[in-house]
Length: 584
Image (cartoon, one colour):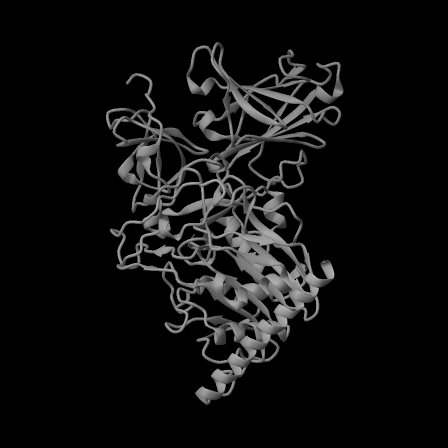
């Protein structure tokens, strides 16, 4: 049975390749066009060809410096030593090309275009393709009229060949979080969600795994990834396990403007939609030819105004920038020692209980009396701390390496509650404990142990003047074995957090404004201001007031309320639970 399946698979591949190859030769012959290179490649530099042009595929382009363009991705390839050109795929790929990039084709890929790409792979070239979900409605602030994606990649021979030779099978689905509604699908910039780097080791996502950095995506299709196929192998890159994959393309608007409504609701249907661990990106290698293939289920991850948006040299989404740079380096087959370093200005701490990756300056140290605990693993010696723009980082040094099950408590005086709540953190998670009330789970607190105890804590738990007193415990409910003698005043630095972990697993909303806007302590302009936020700030959304004119939000800095009109959500705000603010 397996032998027959193998023969069938090889037979299909041969037939498909023959068909696309003959079509390509016929297309070239009929057009009377030889394979053109355009201009000579610069000596010793790899050539990267971006596929663009209004016809036949209408794909994203490097000549577009706007939000939907790929000019920043082209700059990444150039920074890695490549020469970059663009070509319309009406002729074979230049022989000297090392990498081809095709992102967001909006029109159906014919047999000839598929043949050109497959012939390039068969000759050992490397290919990056990013196909958005079928029928996705493309409408964003930079375009007045929208259009639907009609790539039909799932119906073509190219997708079958990707599956047969690389083990990557693309599906015609839309990956939707449970809170997504049809209102979310009216514009690309309201389809955003979060994907995680896969745990399977590979050099592209290694730093994302090290620092637990999610990636931002803007509407994706999912794919199946087979680790080993005949003559090839594949590895998953990005996944989600909190979403489902909608199979009905009728969820998207089908007209020319956002006013056109969808014909079907976006909702999970058991037996029809895909659930579980959904892959949204993968890489594969053909062991016969050495060809490398990268497949992404979302093109916005790589576009100027989405995944690669920045303020000057500082990326808004560092994980996406790191991912794009390392993916480009992998496609260029550069040695890993030549791959780009992590972007500067961010807090790169692994939370492994070691101080080696801490900044050299602007770190406060609070000593503690030695020997005031009979157990050296719980005897505090020094506590170090600093803060970036969102989080507070602590390193607790003990007389002996700490127990992996150590528990840390911190009094939260700055919350202004009576009685004073306390934070309880361990390697398994963190909660706020209030007498007589249920514990509140904290999603963005993390603790790691090594030669010391290392913590990351959100600034919303502290006042502007961050003062921390910590205690260590051997087990939940046990009395502390040691506490810091005096509160540690934690200094701010000019570093930025590479991600806001308060956002994980929740509906989101983002501020888009030319100036600062207020976060309030309650849903009214008559209440006090909790803080000021600026363009691009994202929040987890917790609830709404009765008419959804005010939304309760939370991130690493604040928990408070914002006027709904200031927010661009990735869901329908009216579907949020109603929250009654204290004093309302």
